[in-house]
Image 1 (tube, rainbow, N blue to C red):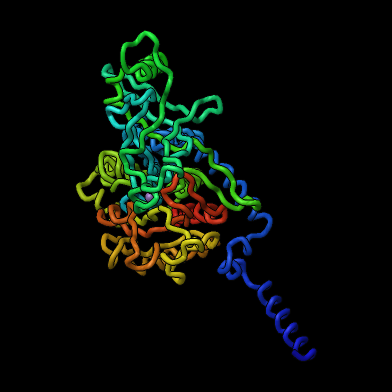
Image 2 (image 1 turned 180 degrees about the vertical axis):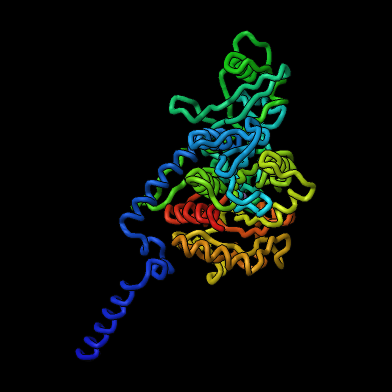
Amino acid sequence: MKKDMEQELLKAVSSAEGQADSESAGEKAKNCGWQGADAAEREKIMAFSEGYIRFLNEAKTEREAVREIVRQAEDAGFRNIADADSLQPGDRVYGINHGKSIYMAVLGRQPLTAGFQGVGAHIDAPRLDLKQNPLYEDSGIAMLKTHYYGGIKKYQWTTVPLALHGVVAFKDGSVKEVCIGEDEEDPVFIITDLLPHLAAKQNAKKLAEGVPAENLNILVGSVPQTDADSEFVKKNILALLKEKYGMEEDDFRSAEIEAVPAAMARSTGLDRSMVSGYGQDDRVCAYPGLRGILDIDGVPERTALCIFADKEEIGSVGVTGMQSSNFELFIMDLLEKTGIVNPYAVQRTFSASRVLSADVTAAFDPTYADVMERRNAAYMSKGISLKKYTGARGKSGASDANAEFVGYVRGVFDRAGVVCQSSEMGKVDEGGGGTIAYILANRGMQVLDCGVPILSMHSPYETASKFDIYQAYKAYKAFLLAE
Ligand code: MN
Ligand code: MN
């Protein structure tokens, strides 16, 4: 290459760089969000993620998430709707559905029938539940039988430290809480796997069949009780349970105990740009939604409402799932306590409401690029991702948001400086997924899926970008306050 040509080229490159410098943060962020974030913004991103990491560690189950949300809500001036006789614009309330899902609202200047601005996330996560007759002894080892909850790759749950969280409900109506494995002094629990030396047959199986569900048995003890005449180890465990929780073996029948990874959430990477931890699907959207509604100051124009649902991972069914009519009851309570009583009020409210279904999507993973369609994948650190539709095989089961509503949301985000991208999850016919969106949409609300892309979704230790987590906070807050 000739010298003068080289210099021409250098000039061209430097002028292009100059142009890039003058571009808005939003333009730069098309490549990577971090590039558009100045030092002050990066500080906010990092600070926000500290609160998020604490939330992940405090709230590993849906019950714990509800408790933590109530604690933060009450600190921010919210009260239980059951304690309010009447409500005024600006009032901040929450309603708890059987300890496992929770709804929050800040009442707007306009009547509720003008519609609310909603953000709906879920607070259940894939895990292993103890069966109702879990405890047994075999070959000198006591173990607990489990039934997995939600979509898991079973092999991922062997040989990782587990903690047991949940409740034991007794026949007299009392309830004891269980949480073992989180304190540094606590023991942890483990599921064994086969040593490679003897795993030739296991290795030849399909990945999905390598560890059958009935092999997910949790090691719980190995010390025999000396004065027993059989099941020595099991009896020793029962004695310990009696001492610690006052429970008999039979009480497992009315217990809800979940085995979750004992590992704490941490910053990830030399640059600390990511968060890894259990249960980020969907706490990575629930926490930004929570912070968004907590941060509302004064009286919003329209009512701001957050949903933290249970049972999303198994189809949103049951009394605490999104399909439960207890959500309608919360809306009816809001209506009645603001003086609106007519037979159409609930449906009028729903039909005028706008909701973001705040749930995660798969982040593009260069190691597994072949399942993704690059032009429509969600990328780490490119902001919160809008999914106009979800579903699988020809959008089956999708809640496909109207273009007009997507345009409205893009406008709200733009004005708030939110960095966002649009994606669908994986190649067409590669698989798919769903959220609570369709359930809300079926009731007449306008709904758009919108959440944080994560790596290793549904694994014991998922990863998200701190940049995206902060964009979710900005996005949900702006949406809750939008007119
Ligand atoms: Mn989810
Ligand atoms: Mn999920």
